[in-house]
Length: 164
Length: 436
Image (tube, helix red, strand yellow):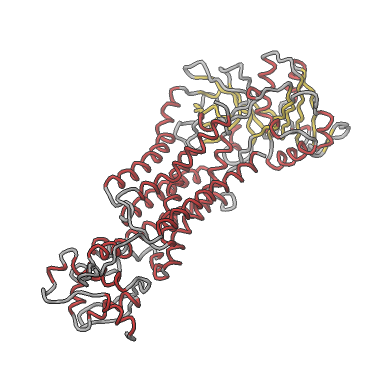
């Protein structure tokens, strides 16, 4: 009998712990009150905070501190090269929306495997994370000062178009 | 403290420990929340990680922790929750893939990042650990080999999971958190290192040696031990110990019940039947061989029940702990009325017959033999112990407790028969040990 009771107790403990995990996940996945990145008065796209948060949440696990891994290219310098190349500006947006897999850009960039698509993110989130990536880990040193970064509209436009 | 109080505190303590790594991960600096499936995957991952450490704590054989519940129950729980934890661990990557199918590529043990690889190998280690434990006999894995690989796979899985969490850096995102999680693993791994490597050193100071090995019946032996350099070992009749023969670090370690009287702490006897690799050679052990004892363990004892009399039910070598209890009661000139139902295959294979005859003269003890294959002229009970045999032996006017030890199938059937006869659960006691 005490073995039957033990079996019941084991299931109960497992279910309670699973329930706790579900509750924690539910609470944490609720969106927090994040400030609107486009300020009403100036119309300036404030991407810094949002970009850092989205990067930490979505990109950092595979690209910690802008690094790569086996089969994963780094973002340091490499991402800027992509951005500055012919068609690169649109390419980076497509990469995030569709998950790639365009083979080459400007003949100088290596072939990539698949990249997870993030089309579930908003235009502002994608534009912010791209800007964060282009200006972190010394990448901003490689950007020409007159080159504009991304705006949410850029992503919106690209989402509407075909993109090969 | 009473049993209910103990259970409450133990449950609370266990619940807190089970979520501690998760709470450490969620403490400030708190990582930003993500999609539900991702958060669920991580929360379950941390809870499974906690259980991996707790598994080491559960098998630490800590007497004060195990006594109120029964160490056999604690071991059984280790087994059951281990299997459930594996299911949760596998759910961790499955949920991530459900959220983002492209993550499937990270299941590749040779691709992905170092972080994903350590995770994959941790899970693989746990799968091998579980499969070799549940199906050890079918896979023909020797007990000693199983013990070593079980410990190494378990510790390996914990270390790989630890590195996995550290490399991902999302929840181990501050030095204090990294340190806290490392400390958690260190404590539990340290416990096992202490149990398997350090504690045996203390066993060496209170060692025993074989005095003689006596044949009791075909394939049944009594191993008699005498203390080396100390006065002996106090135990409650019915308890058992893990016995190592030869050296204190031997992985050849098996639990055996004491069959000797608890009133004779300087002369221990173990009743052993030839049932496997280790026990098959017990008859060849030489006098003078050193023996190391880890115990006493177990809550199965006549000393632990306030009864007006006992109904002992023994099947085969299950007579060992019961013999210990009867001998002890006789040495103490116990005046209560007792009954022994002793089920064996046949008369010629029945161990300790003469001794039981002597004990029934010294005690108010009624003996009932039950033979599966009765010999010619046997007029007593035959077949298996059932309600018909038990009914006339039950004392409804008194607080009679049942102490039972035998093969699993027998105990299950007899327990059912006792319920049918109206014996309440709290007066039926037994210990099961067939874990792996």
